[in-house]
Length: 173
Image (cartoon, rainbow, N blue to C red; front, side, top):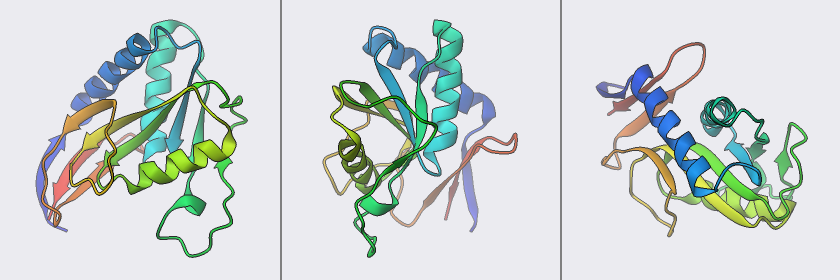
């Protein structure tokens, strides 16, 4: 893969996620009823950072968990329709659930996440927070909270690194 450009460095990522944290708090009039779910793999670091920010801002602990959507993907041949949420998150029934992911592209991952959430209960609302929205939707999915909109071609790849102390968003060819 050839690096085309660096879209966001560590400071830009932190700034965007801090802004999204404030937006989540404002739009939900606090976090009393909010649960954050990070889609396994890429959404988990985004979720963890949002939870950390919200906890610092609100001086309270917001429930969160990792959401495994493997069984709900439309490209998965071995469906058993079981969803997994770890970390013993409280019930999603009647909650304002914020799905967290790194990149929004076709919308298929988010569709699978919504299906997995409904298998676990009926939330009051489902919202979507993404670090990068690159367009090219195949489904009518729109993020409520976006770190950065990045128009891309379908041939380009957006790589998000948020582990091991490294943070960057890179556009590759």
